[in-house]
Length: 50
Ligand SMILES: [Zn+2]
Image (cartoon, rainbow, N blue to C red; front, side, top):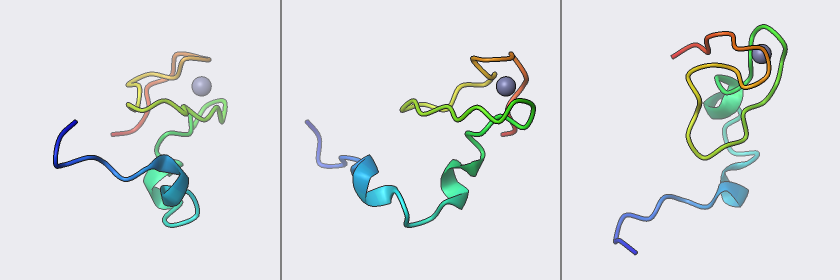
């Protein structure tokens, strides 16, 4: 518990789609819906843009 809690994901959805566009694999289109963006696609292993 800190004073700098991140905003809840639910409120974030629909606000700015660009912010999670970089979580979509350019190779297979898989959406990495984890809290932290993976460096590589969990599906095909392609490197995600940073
Ligand atoms: Zn992929």
